[in-house]
Length: 164
Image 1 (cartoon, helix red, strand yellow):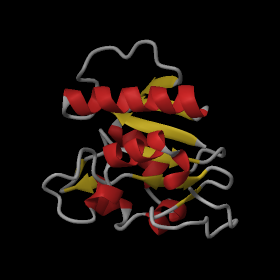
Image 2 (cartoon, rainbow, N blue to C red; image 1 turned 30 degrees about the horizontal axis):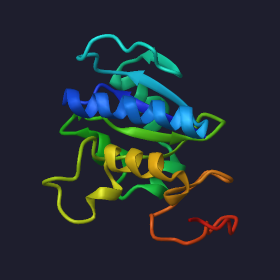
Image 3 (cartoon, rainbow, N blue to C red; image 1 turned 90 degrees about the vertical axis):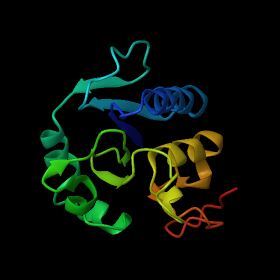
Image 4 (tube, rainbow, N blue to C red; image 1 turned 180 degrees about the vertical axis):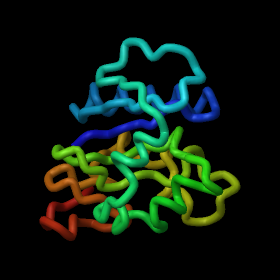
């Protein structure tokens, strides 16, 4: 499993918080982390434990989000609605769960906090997702088989692995 951050979030505090959480996930849980920098607005990223690449939003959309049936099954909207609004790419600030083959299995569809987005948005935001798995990775993801969960299951529906 790989956690990929599409940097930089619009808000500097959100960006810095995402970086801290990714470092924590790498250091404490040995999860592979990487950054696709598509909107460099907060200066250099140094001392990051994973790969940092510079890409265009168009390149990320084509590679990870467009025509991805696995992603289509795990998010509430089709990628063109979630990440390409009014003809403009809106990917920066989001995170994705990528399998070992390089396919995005899930991605947040709201880059920041859920404030102002209404009930239920916490399962769609980058920060809420990262905070959930940094605290207890098994609360949202069954690391054993890379199945993304809704957050209220007590076991993984794919392999039966019990979640704490």
